[in-house]
Image 1 (tube, rainbow, N blue to C red):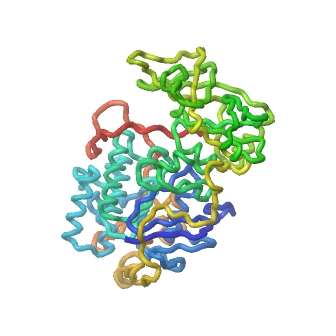
Image 2 (cartoon, rainbow, N blue to C red):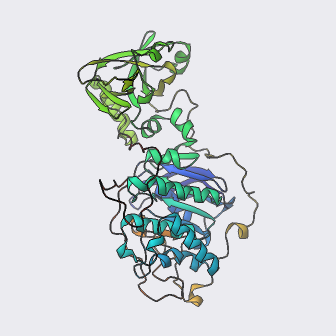
Image 3 (spheres, rainbow, N blue to C red):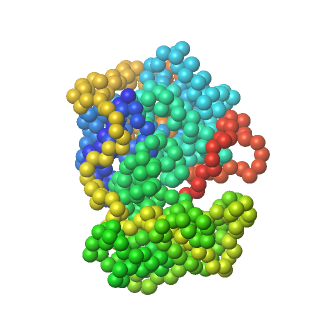
Length: 512
Protein backbone atom coordinates (compact mmCIF):
# COMPACT_ATOMS: atom_id res chain seq x y z
CA UNK A 1 0.00 0.00 0.00
CA UNK A 2 0.89 3.67 -0.21
CA UNK A 3 1.55 6.41 2.35
CA UNK A 4 -0.15 9.76 1.73
CA UNK A 5 1.09 13.18 2.75
CA UNK A 6 0.07 16.78 2.21
CA UNK A 7 2.48 19.59 3.07
CA UNK A 8 1.15 23.11 3.37
CA UNK A 9 -1.53 22.63 0.69
CA UNK A 10 -3.61 25.66 -0.30
CA UNK A 11 -6.58 25.60 -2.67
CA UNK A 12 -8.68 28.56 -3.78
CA UNK A 13 -12.25 28.40 -5.05
CA UNK A 14 -13.15 30.12 -8.36
CA UNK A 15 -14.74 32.97 -6.38
CA UNK A 16 -11.47 33.57 -4.54
CA UNK A 17 -12.49 32.00 -1.23
CA UNK A 18 -10.07 29.56 0.38
CA UNK A 19 -11.03 25.86 0.28
CA UNK A 20 -7.82 24.52 1.82
CA UNK A 21 -5.75 26.65 4.16
CA UNK A 22 -2.25 25.24 4.50
CA UNK A 23 -3.30 21.64 5.17
CA UNK A 24 -0.62 19.35 6.61
CA UNK A 25 -1.56 15.69 6.85
CA UNK A 26 0.28 12.38 6.96
CA UNK A 27 -1.42 8.99 6.54
CA UNK A 28 1.05 6.08 6.85
CA UNK A 29 0.78 3.09 4.55
CA UNK A 30 -2.04 0.69 5.39
CA UNK A 31 -3.78 3.05 7.83
CA UNK A 32 -7.47 4.01 7.81
CA UNK A 33 -8.15 7.64 8.72
CA UNK A 34 -11.39 9.59 9.05
CA UNK A 35 -11.59 13.26 8.10
CA UNK A 36 -14.62 14.87 9.72
CA UNK A 37 -16.12 18.32 9.89
CA UNK A 38 -19.31 20.21 9.07
CA UNK A 39 -20.39 20.78 5.46
CA UNK A 40 -17.98 23.17 3.74
CA UNK A 41 -15.06 22.25 6.00
CA UNK A 42 -12.87 21.30 3.02
CA UNK A 43 -13.18 17.51 3.19
CA UNK A 44 -14.14 16.98 -0.45
CA UNK A 45 -11.61 19.56 -1.63
CA UNK A 46 -8.88 17.64 0.21
CA UNK A 47 -9.78 14.38 -1.57
CA UNK A 48 -9.98 16.08 -4.98
CA UNK A 49 -6.49 17.53 -4.53
CA UNK A 50 -5.15 14.15 -3.40
CA UNK A 51 -6.54 12.31 -6.40
CA UNK A 52 -5.37 15.02 -8.80
CA UNK A 53 -8.72 16.35 -9.99
CA UNK A 54 -8.07 19.87 -8.66
CA UNK A 55 -4.74 21.70 -8.98
CA UNK A 56 -3.75 23.26 -5.67
CA UNK A 57 -2.26 26.75 -5.46
CA UNK A 58 0.66 25.93 -3.17
CA UNK A 59 2.18 23.05 -1.21
CA UNK A 60 3.00 19.44 -2.06
CA UNK A 61 1.13 16.15 -2.41
CA UNK A 62 3.28 13.06 -1.79
CA UNK A 63 2.63 9.37 -2.37
CA UNK A 64 5.17 7.10 -0.69
CA UNK A 65 7.35 10.12 -0.06
CA UNK A 66 7.46 11.16 -3.74
CA UNK A 67 6.01 14.54 -4.78
CA UNK A 68 3.26 13.94 -7.37
CA UNK A 69 2.14 17.52 -8.00
CA UNK A 70 2.85 17.13 -11.73
CA UNK A 71 1.41 13.60 -11.97
CA UNK A 72 -2.04 13.42 -13.54
CA UNK A 73 -5.05 11.91 -11.82
CA UNK A 74 -4.97 8.80 -13.99
CA UNK A 75 -1.40 7.92 -13.11
CA UNK A 76 -1.82 8.50 -9.38
CA UNK A 77 -4.04 5.38 -9.36
CA UNK A 78 -6.17 6.37 -6.36
CA UNK A 79 -9.72 5.03 -6.12
CA UNK A 80 -12.23 7.73 -5.15
CA UNK A 81 -15.91 7.33 -4.27
CA UNK A 82 -17.91 10.54 -4.22
CA UNK A 83 -20.98 11.19 -2.13
CA UNK A 84 -22.90 11.98 -5.32
CA UNK A 85 -22.66 8.49 -6.78
CA UNK A 86 -23.48 7.88 -10.45
CA UNK A 87 -23.71 4.59 -12.30
CA UNK A 88 -23.72 3.65 -15.96
CA UNK A 89 -27.41 3.39 -16.90
CA UNK A 90 -26.85 0.82 -19.65
CA UNK A 91 -24.87 -1.57 -17.40
CA UNK A 92 -26.33 -3.89 -14.80
CA UNK A 93 -25.01 -4.10 -11.24
CA UNK A 94 -22.48 -6.81 -12.10
CA UNK A 95 -20.92 -4.82 -14.94
CA UNK A 96 -20.93 -1.60 -12.92
CA UNK A 97 -19.01 -3.42 -10.18
CA UNK A 98 -16.55 -4.77 -12.74
CA UNK A 99 -16.08 -1.57 -14.72
CA UNK A 100 -13.07 -0.02 -12.98
CA UNK A 101 -11.28 -3.36 -12.58
CA UNK A 102 -11.74 -4.20 -16.27
CA UNK A 103 -10.12 -0.90 -17.24
CA UNK A 104 -7.13 -2.00 -15.19
CA UNK A 105 -6.98 -5.38 -16.97
CA UNK A 106 -7.62 -7.54 -13.91
CA UNK A 107 -7.50 -11.30 -14.31
CA UNK A 108 -11.03 -12.39 -15.31
CA UNK A 109 -11.26 -15.37 -12.97
CA UNK A 110 -9.94 -13.38 -10.04
CA UNK A 111 -12.27 -10.50 -10.89
CA UNK A 112 -15.34 -12.76 -11.03
CA UNK A 113 -14.47 -14.17 -7.61
CA UNK A 114 -13.96 -10.72 -6.13
CA UNK A 115 -17.24 -9.41 -7.55
CA UNK A 116 -19.12 -12.28 -5.92
CA UNK A 117 -17.38 -11.58 -2.61
CA UNK A 118 -18.03 -7.84 -2.69
CA UNK A 119 -21.65 -8.32 -3.80
CA UNK A 120 -22.24 -10.62 -0.84
CA UNK A 121 -20.56 -8.18 1.51
CA UNK A 122 -22.80 -5.29 0.41
CA UNK A 123 -26.04 -7.26 0.03
CA UNK A 124 -25.99 -6.90 -3.77
CA UNK A 125 -25.97 -10.58 -4.75
CA UNK A 126 -29.67 -10.59 -5.62
CA UNK A 127 -29.34 -7.37 -7.62
CA UNK A 128 -26.52 -8.26 -10.03
CA UNK A 129 -28.83 -8.43 -13.07
CA UNK A 130 -30.60 -5.14 -12.34
CA UNK A 131 -29.75 -1.82 -13.94
CA UNK A 132 -29.46 1.38 -11.89
CA UNK A 133 -32.98 2.54 -12.77
CA UNK A 134 -34.34 -0.41 -10.78
CA UNK A 135 -32.23 0.33 -7.68
CA UNK A 136 -32.93 2.79 -4.88
CA UNK A 137 -30.40 5.39 -3.74
CA UNK A 138 -28.99 3.22 -0.97
CA UNK A 139 -28.45 0.29 -3.34
CA UNK A 140 -26.84 2.51 -5.99
CA UNK A 141 -24.50 3.93 -3.39
CA UNK A 142 -23.46 0.43 -2.33
CA UNK A 143 -22.74 -0.41 -5.97
CA UNK A 144 -20.48 2.65 -6.19
CA UNK A 145 -18.68 1.55 -3.02
CA UNK A 146 -18.40 -2.00 -4.34
CA UNK A 147 -16.86 -0.83 -7.60
CA UNK A 148 -14.06 0.76 -5.59
CA UNK A 149 -13.51 -2.35 -3.45
CA UNK A 150 -13.43 -4.58 -6.53
CA UNK A 151 -10.44 -2.88 -8.13
CA UNK A 152 -6.83 -2.65 -6.99
CA UNK A 153 -5.51 0.83 -6.22
CA UNK A 154 -2.62 2.43 -4.39
CA UNK A 155 -5.05 3.95 -1.87
CA UNK A 156 -8.81 4.37 -1.42
CA UNK A 157 -10.67 7.63 -0.77
CA UNK A 158 -14.34 7.70 0.29
CA UNK A 159 -16.31 10.96 0.39
CA UNK A 160 -19.40 10.56 2.64
CA UNK A 161 -19.80 7.00 1.29
CA UNK A 162 -22.68 6.00 3.61
CA UNK A 163 -24.86 9.11 3.35
CA UNK A 164 -27.66 7.38 1.41
CA UNK A 165 -27.90 4.37 3.73
CA UNK A 166 -30.95 4.24 6.05
CA UNK A 167 -30.08 4.47 9.71
CA UNK A 168 -31.17 0.88 10.35
CA UNK A 169 -28.45 -0.49 8.04
CA UNK A 170 -25.90 2.30 7.92
CA UNK A 171 -23.89 0.92 10.84
CA UNK A 172 -23.72 -2.52 9.21
CA UNK A 173 -22.59 -1.20 5.82
CA UNK A 174 -20.01 1.02 7.48
CA UNK A 175 -18.70 -1.89 9.53
CA UNK A 176 -18.24 -4.33 6.66
CA UNK A 177 -16.55 -1.75 4.41
CA UNK A 178 -14.06 -0.61 7.04
CA UNK A 179 -13.37 -4.21 8.06
CA UNK A 180 -12.65 -5.11 4.40
CA UNK A 181 -10.21 -2.20 4.15
CA UNK A 182 -8.40 -3.08 7.37
CA UNK A 183 -8.09 -6.78 6.57
CA UNK A 184 -6.73 -5.89 3.13
CA UNK A 185 -4.27 -3.41 4.70
CA UNK A 186 -5.51 -0.72 2.31
CA UNK A 187 -4.52 2.89 2.89
CA UNK A 188 -7.92 4.56 3.22
CA UNK A 189 -9.37 7.98 3.93
CA UNK A 190 -13.06 8.37 4.76
CA UNK A 191 -14.86 11.69 5.16
CA UNK A 192 -18.01 12.26 7.16
CA UNK A 193 -20.07 15.06 8.70
CA UNK A 194 -21.48 12.76 11.39
CA UNK A 195 -19.77 12.77 14.77
CA UNK A 196 -20.78 9.21 15.71
CA UNK A 197 -19.29 7.97 12.44
CA UNK A 198 -16.07 9.91 12.96
CA UNK A 199 -15.54 8.38 16.38
CA UNK A 200 -16.15 4.78 15.26
CA UNK A 201 -14.81 4.50 11.69
CA UNK A 202 -11.11 4.28 12.54
CA UNK A 203 -8.45 4.62 15.20
CA UNK A 204 -7.39 8.04 13.88
CA UNK A 205 -9.56 11.11 13.34
CA UNK A 206 -8.74 14.40 11.60
CA UNK A 207 -11.08 17.31 12.40
CA UNK A 208 -11.34 19.99 9.69
CA UNK A 209 -13.06 23.36 9.63
CA UNK A 210 -12.73 26.36 7.34
CA UNK A 211 -10.27 24.48 5.15
CA UNK A 212 -7.79 23.79 7.97
CA UNK A 213 -6.95 20.80 10.16
CA UNK A 214 -8.02 21.75 13.69
CA UNK A 215 -6.86 18.58 15.44
CA UNK A 216 -5.76 15.03 14.66
CA UNK A 217 -5.45 12.05 16.96
CA UNK A 218 -7.32 9.10 18.42
CA UNK A 219 -11.07 9.51 19.05
CA UNK A 220 -10.44 9.32 22.79
CA UNK A 221 -7.76 12.00 22.71
CA UNK A 222 -9.83 14.42 20.65
CA UNK A 223 -12.97 13.83 22.69
CA UNK A 224 -11.31 14.10 26.10
CA UNK A 225 -8.86 16.90 25.22
CA UNK A 226 -10.29 19.00 22.36
CA UNK A 227 -7.72 21.41 20.99
CA UNK A 228 -10.05 24.38 20.72
CA UNK A 229 -13.63 25.63 20.99
CA UNK A 230 -14.64 24.33 17.58
CA UNK A 231 -13.44 20.77 18.20
CA UNK A 232 -15.06 20.82 21.65
CA UNK A 233 -18.42 21.91 20.24
CA UNK A 234 -18.35 19.72 17.13
CA UNK A 235 -17.40 16.40 18.72
CA UNK A 236 -20.12 15.37 21.11
CA UNK A 237 -23.82 14.66 21.28
CA UNK A 238 -25.25 16.48 23.07
CA UNK A 239 -22.68 19.19 22.39
CA UNK A 240 -20.37 20.41 25.13
CA UNK A 241 -21.79 23.17 27.32
CA UNK A 242 -19.73 26.30 26.62
CA UNK A 243 -20.30 29.46 28.66
CA UNK A 244 -18.33 32.62 29.55
CA UNK A 245 -16.60 33.15 32.88
CA UNK A 246 -15.03 36.28 34.40
CA UNK A 247 -12.37 36.38 37.07
CA UNK A 248 -13.39 38.15 40.26
CA UNK A 249 -10.72 37.90 42.87
CA UNK A 250 -10.15 34.27 43.79
CA UNK A 251 -13.11 32.93 41.82
CA UNK A 252 -14.25 32.46 38.23
CA UNK A 253 -17.84 33.59 37.99
CA UNK A 254 -20.09 32.26 35.21
CA UNK A 255 -23.85 32.07 34.59
CA UNK A 256 -23.86 28.45 35.80
CA UNK A 257 -20.79 27.75 37.94
CA UNK A 258 -18.61 29.61 40.40
CA UNK A 259 -15.15 28.08 40.27
CA UNK A 260 -12.54 28.67 42.99
CA UNK A 261 -9.16 29.55 41.45
CA UNK A 262 -6.66 27.00 42.71
CA UNK A 263 -2.96 26.87 41.84
CA UNK A 264 -3.50 24.94 38.61
CA UNK A 265 -6.26 27.24 37.41
CA UNK A 266 -4.13 30.25 38.39
CA UNK A 267 -1.38 28.93 36.14
CA UNK A 268 -3.80 28.39 33.24
CA UNK A 269 -5.45 31.80 33.54
CA UNK A 270 -2.26 33.86 33.66
CA UNK A 271 -3.35 37.47 33.17
CA UNK A 272 -6.64 36.57 31.48
CA UNK A 273 -9.75 38.13 32.97
CA UNK A 274 -12.24 36.28 30.75
CA UNK A 275 -12.27 32.66 29.59
CA UNK A 276 -14.75 30.14 28.20
CA UNK A 277 -15.61 27.16 30.40
CA UNK A 278 -16.75 23.82 28.99
CA UNK A 279 -18.57 20.86 30.54
CA UNK A 280 -19.79 17.80 28.69
CA UNK A 281 -23.39 16.82 29.60
CA UNK A 282 -22.40 13.21 30.34
CA UNK A 283 -19.87 14.39 32.93
CA UNK A 284 -22.59 15.91 35.10
CA UNK A 285 -23.78 14.08 38.21
CA UNK A 286 -27.01 14.20 40.19
CA UNK A 287 -26.01 16.42 43.11
CA UNK A 288 -28.17 14.42 45.53
CA UNK A 289 -26.56 11.06 44.72
CA UNK A 290 -23.92 9.21 46.69
CA UNK A 291 -21.64 9.32 43.64
CA UNK A 292 -21.71 13.13 43.64
CA UNK A 293 -21.11 13.38 47.38
CA UNK A 294 -18.03 11.19 47.04
CA UNK A 295 -16.33 13.52 44.50
CA UNK A 296 -13.77 15.75 46.28
CA UNK A 297 -13.88 19.44 45.39
CA UNK A 298 -16.83 18.99 43.04
CA UNK A 299 -18.47 22.09 41.57
CA UNK A 300 -22.13 22.54 42.45
CA UNK A 301 -25.02 24.33 40.77
CA UNK A 302 -28.73 24.47 41.41
CA UNK A 303 -31.13 25.73 38.74
CA UNK A 304 -34.67 25.42 37.45
CA UNK A 305 -35.34 22.68 34.90
CA UNK A 306 -36.77 24.22 31.73
CA UNK A 307 -37.17 20.98 29.78
CA UNK A 308 -36.46 17.25 30.07
CA UNK A 309 -35.77 14.67 27.36
CA UNK A 310 -36.26 11.13 28.68
CA UNK A 311 -34.64 8.19 26.86
CA UNK A 312 -35.19 5.20 29.13
CA UNK A 313 -32.19 4.83 31.39
CA UNK A 314 -31.02 8.45 31.05
CA UNK A 315 -32.54 11.91 30.77
CA UNK A 316 -31.33 15.25 29.48
CA UNK A 317 -32.12 18.18 31.73
CA UNK A 318 -32.09 21.64 30.14
CA UNK A 319 -31.32 24.49 32.55
CA UNK A 320 -31.72 27.99 31.15
CA UNK A 321 -29.52 30.99 31.94
CA UNK A 322 -28.88 34.54 30.76
CA UNK A 323 -25.71 36.47 30.01
CA UNK A 324 -24.91 40.15 29.99
CA UNK A 325 -25.66 41.79 26.59
CA UNK A 326 -22.05 42.96 26.22
CA UNK A 327 -20.76 39.46 26.91
CA UNK A 328 -23.29 38.04 24.47
CA UNK A 329 -21.96 40.33 21.75
CA UNK A 330 -18.44 39.04 22.36
CA UNK A 331 -19.69 35.47 22.16
CA UNK A 332 -21.43 36.22 18.88
CA UNK A 333 -18.17 37.66 17.53
CA UNK A 334 -16.42 34.37 18.37
CA UNK A 335 -19.14 32.44 16.55
CA UNK A 336 -18.87 34.73 13.55
CA UNK A 337 -15.11 34.21 13.43
CA UNK A 338 -15.50 30.43 13.48
CA UNK A 339 -18.72 30.42 11.39
CA UNK A 340 -20.18 27.87 13.80
CA UNK A 341 -22.80 27.91 16.56
CA UNK A 342 -20.92 27.35 19.84
CA UNK A 343 -23.01 28.86 22.60
CA UNK A 344 -26.55 28.21 23.78
CA UNK A 345 -28.66 29.93 26.42
CA UNK A 346 -29.09 26.69 28.35
CA UNK A 347 -26.96 24.16 30.20
CA UNK A 348 -27.52 20.45 29.42
CA UNK A 349 -26.95 17.72 32.01
CA UNK A 350 -27.24 14.02 31.18
CA UNK A 351 -28.44 12.26 34.34
CA UNK A 352 -29.69 8.78 35.27
CA UNK A 353 -33.45 8.33 34.99
CA UNK A 354 -33.35 5.44 37.46
CA UNK A 355 -31.92 5.59 40.97
CA UNK A 356 -31.72 2.58 43.32
CA UNK A 357 -34.03 0.69 41.00
CA UNK A 358 -36.70 3.39 41.16
CA UNK A 359 -37.64 5.99 38.52
CA UNK A 360 -35.85 9.30 39.09
CA UNK A 361 -37.33 11.40 36.31
CA UNK A 362 -37.00 15.14 36.59
CA UNK A 363 -40.00 17.34 36.01
CA UNK A 364 -40.15 20.65 34.19
CA UNK A 365 -40.14 23.52 36.66
CA UNK A 366 -38.47 21.72 39.54
CA UNK A 367 -35.08 22.70 40.93
CA UNK A 368 -32.22 20.38 40.00
CA UNK A 369 -28.93 20.12 41.83
CA UNK A 370 -26.03 19.29 39.52
CA UNK A 371 -22.49 18.30 40.43
CA UNK A 372 -19.49 18.66 38.07
CA UNK A 373 -16.16 17.00 38.95
CA UNK A 374 -13.48 19.65 38.82
CA UNK A 375 -11.19 17.56 36.63
CA UNK A 376 -13.94 17.43 33.98
CA UNK A 377 -13.92 21.21 33.55
CA UNK A 378 -12.44 22.55 30.29
CA UNK A 379 -10.96 26.05 30.10
CA UNK A 380 -10.58 27.85 26.75
CA UNK A 381 -8.95 31.13 25.79
CA UNK A 382 -11.71 33.62 24.94
CA UNK A 383 -9.60 35.19 22.15
CA UNK A 384 -7.81 32.31 20.41
CA UNK A 385 -10.28 29.57 21.41
CA UNK A 386 -7.40 27.26 22.39
CA UNK A 387 -7.80 24.73 25.20
CA UNK A 388 -5.61 26.10 27.98
CA UNK A 389 -4.84 22.62 29.29
CA UNK A 390 -3.13 21.74 26.02
CA UNK A 391 -0.05 23.21 24.30
CA UNK A 392 -0.93 26.01 21.84
CA UNK A 393 -2.10 24.70 18.48
CA UNK A 394 0.52 25.09 15.74
CA UNK A 395 -1.42 25.03 12.49
CA UNK A 396 1.44 24.79 10.02
CA UNK A 397 3.35 21.81 11.37
CA UNK A 398 2.67 18.42 9.72
CA UNK A 399 0.00 16.44 11.54
CA UNK A 400 0.93 12.78 11.95
CA UNK A 401 -2.27 10.84 12.42
CA UNK A 402 -0.69 7.52 13.30
CA UNK A 403 2.56 6.16 14.61
CA UNK A 404 3.75 3.47 12.25
CA UNK A 405 6.58 2.70 9.89
CA UNK A 406 6.20 4.15 6.42
CA UNK A 407 7.81 3.62 3.08
CA UNK A 408 11.11 5.41 2.71
CA UNK A 409 11.10 8.66 0.79
CA UNK A 410 13.75 7.46 -1.62
CA UNK A 411 11.54 4.88 -3.29
CA UNK A 412 11.43 5.39 -7.00
CA UNK A 413 8.57 6.92 -8.92
CA UNK A 414 8.02 3.55 -10.58
CA UNK A 415 7.21 2.09 -7.16
CA UNK A 416 4.96 5.00 -6.28
CA UNK A 417 2.90 5.30 -9.45
CA UNK A 418 2.00 2.14 -11.30
CA UNK A 419 2.16 1.95 -15.06
CA UNK A 420 -0.98 3.36 -16.57
CA UNK A 421 -3.09 1.43 -19.09
CA UNK A 422 -2.16 1.59 -22.74
CA UNK A 423 -2.72 4.77 -24.70
CA UNK A 424 -6.50 5.35 -25.01
CA UNK A 425 -6.03 6.48 -28.56
CA UNK A 426 -4.69 3.04 -29.45
CA UNK A 427 -6.99 0.98 -27.27
CA UNK A 428 -10.18 2.70 -28.29
CA UNK A 429 -10.98 3.57 -24.69
CA UNK A 430 -12.05 7.03 -23.53
CA UNK A 431 -9.24 9.54 -23.40
CA UNK A 432 -9.96 10.66 -19.82
CA UNK A 433 -11.07 7.66 -17.84
CA UNK A 434 -12.65 7.91 -14.42
CA UNK A 435 -14.69 5.41 -12.56
CA UNK A 436 -17.39 7.90 -11.89
CA UNK A 437 -14.73 10.52 -11.57
CA UNK A 438 -15.25 14.12 -10.82
CA UNK A 439 -15.28 15.37 -14.31
CA UNK A 440 -13.50 13.64 -17.13
CA UNK A 441 -10.80 16.28 -17.29
CA UNK A 442 -10.74 16.96 -13.58
CA UNK A 443 -12.39 20.36 -13.85
CA UNK A 444 -15.99 19.55 -13.03
CA UNK A 445 -17.36 20.06 -9.55
CA UNK A 446 -17.63 17.17 -7.15
CA UNK A 447 -21.38 17.55 -7.13
CA UNK A 448 -21.43 16.38 -10.74
CA UNK A 449 -18.84 13.68 -10.37
CA UNK A 450 -21.02 11.19 -8.85
CA UNK A 451 -19.31 7.94 -8.35
CA UNK A 452 -15.99 6.33 -7.74
CA UNK A 453 -12.98 7.93 -9.37
CA UNK A 454 -10.45 5.52 -10.71
CA UNK A 455 -7.55 7.87 -10.38
CA UNK A 456 -8.75 9.97 -13.29
CA UNK A 457 -10.09 7.23 -15.54
CA UNK A 458 -13.46 8.01 -16.97
CA UNK A 459 -16.32 5.61 -16.70
CA UNK A 460 -17.74 7.48 -19.51
CA UNK A 461 -20.31 4.77 -20.15
CA UNK A 462 -17.69 2.47 -21.63
CA UNK A 463 -17.39 -0.64 -19.53
CA UNK A 464 -14.04 -2.07 -20.63
CA UNK A 465 -13.60 -1.42 -24.29
CA UNK A 466 -15.39 -4.69 -25.05
CA UNK A 467 -18.85 -3.73 -23.89
CA UNK A 468 -21.36 -1.86 -26.01
CA UNK A 469 -20.62 1.65 -27.18
CA UNK A 470 -23.60 2.91 -25.25
CA UNK A 471 -23.92 6.25 -23.62
CA UNK A 472 -20.64 7.94 -22.82
CA UNK A 473 -21.68 9.73 -19.65
CA UNK A 474 -22.61 8.04 -16.39
CA UNK A 475 -26.13 8.65 -15.23
CA UNK A 476 -26.55 11.33 -12.62
CA UNK A 477 -27.85 10.26 -9.24
CA UNK A 478 -31.52 10.92 -8.70
CA UNK A 479 -30.64 13.64 -6.24
CA UNK A 480 -28.10 14.13 -3.51
CA UNK A 481 -29.12 11.99 -0.55
CA UNK A 482 -28.92 13.73 2.79
CA UNK A 483 -26.58 12.20 5.37
CA UNK A 484 -28.28 9.90 7.81
CA UNK A 485 -31.41 9.31 5.70
CA UNK A 486 -33.94 7.91 8.18
CA UNK A 487 -35.28 4.42 7.81
CA UNK A 488 -38.90 3.78 6.98
CA UNK A 489 -40.99 3.57 10.10
CA UNK A 490 -42.21 0.06 9.38
CA UNK A 491 -41.96 -2.81 6.98
CA UNK A 492 -39.28 -5.31 6.16
CA UNK A 493 -36.05 -4.22 4.43
CA UNK A 494 -36.22 -4.13 0.68
CA UNK A 495 -34.46 -6.89 -1.27
CA UNK A 496 -30.73 -6.28 -1.30
CA UNK A 497 -30.77 -4.36 1.99
CA UNK A 498 -28.17 -5.49 4.52
CA UNK A 499 -29.40 -7.03 7.73
CA UNK A 500 -29.80 -4.69 10.68
CA UNK A 501 -26.73 -4.21 12.79
CA UNK A 502 -26.92 -5.36 16.36
CA UNK A 503 -24.58 -2.53 17.40
CA UNK A 504 -25.46 0.25 19.82
CA UNK A 505 -27.71 3.08 18.63
CA UNK A 506 -25.95 5.93 16.92
CA UNK A 507 -26.03 9.33 18.61
CA UNK A 508 -27.31 12.20 16.55
CA UNK A 509 -25.53 15.15 15.02
CA UNK A 510 -24.19 17.72 17.54
CA UNK A 511 -26.07 20.90 18.16
CA UNK A 512 -25.16 23.72 15.85
